[in-house]
Image (spheres, rainbow, N blue to C red):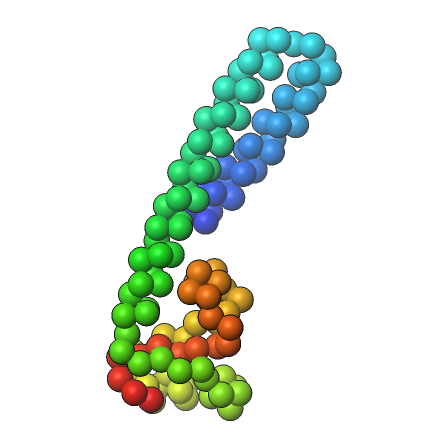
Length: 118
């Protein structure tokens, strides 16, 4: 299971436990309240760990892309025919500003990164 799927399942479990905790608090069931508080704390810790892993992966991926020798903003015509562009430029990586990688890198426009000038 990749990190994104694992994070989603953990968030789903956390939501379910919070709802069950609220129901137990209404009933006044102290044993169940303690159990769910422990489980919520453990899930929160695991979620934070996974988010840290995702951040480290994104940073390393960003550094690899930034290490490429050449980059430039892609024109609208190039963006429209991305398949042709990728076939003509060997090793091209296109980063969109609305993706997680694009936000991490702080780019404003669709940018292509390549080992050689294109």
